[in-house]
Length: 326
Image 1 (cartoon, rainbow, N blue to C red):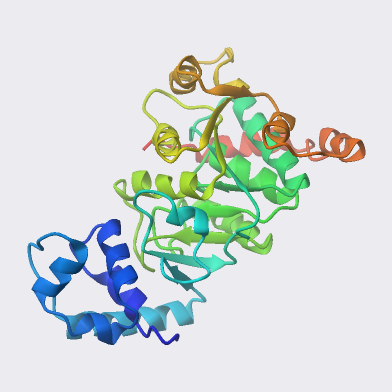
Image 2: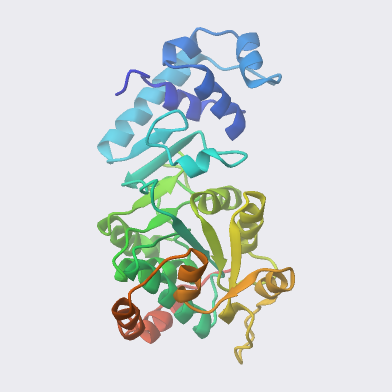
């Protein structure tokens, strides 16, 4: 435990606070003792607003000790807004998570991440394109951040790991509560790649429909650019797109998300993004050009000729695990 003691966990546990409130406390205080001796009025002055109720710090401390033991037992680490290992790009968004819990290794702050998200019920073409772009990005050393959901998210994670890059999955649950459970092997693959499973929620927190929109701001916040592969009119991917625009990130739509597929796949979300000015991405090479990356010709050939075998099988297997959009 650091010299900050249990401060980070205490701040994460305090009920009735927004992420901005929690960051205010982490910015204002250096140790748990500094925080736990304060009165309600002093806490209100620190966060800049009135609190509807106050808490018993002794009880919160006990819970923090329990959470620390759980994290230690389950190999879960955390990085608070005030710590040096907190992803610097997340500090720049409006409401950064005060504490990130994670398994694995956090992203290298010197490398840009590519956010790829989309529908849980993608067309065949969108599934292929998500995998191929993520694979090509991985071969070029670009890591993908997504949400570990069925469909586009899962195909992006798989492609990126197969391309050899460490990947990053942001959950709407605790990092020890992999959702959907059928993606546990994929979560392990991400960890084995040198990446991380990340969440702002404490260990043991179950997935909730209210958690997923909030986690989407972290996906976009970690990303340099966000690619929406395919999305219906009502989709969590479009929430990620909105956060990306608010955060000043580049927002793109994949070509498969706007082209007719011969099926009844709803693409109205990505079509609307295109109509509103989102640029179209056809392959990973479009991303390299936008990021001013130089890729050697022999590496381009490798990306064009490898990693495609088995995509149809992966797409077929995904059909067994598709779920309703949230």
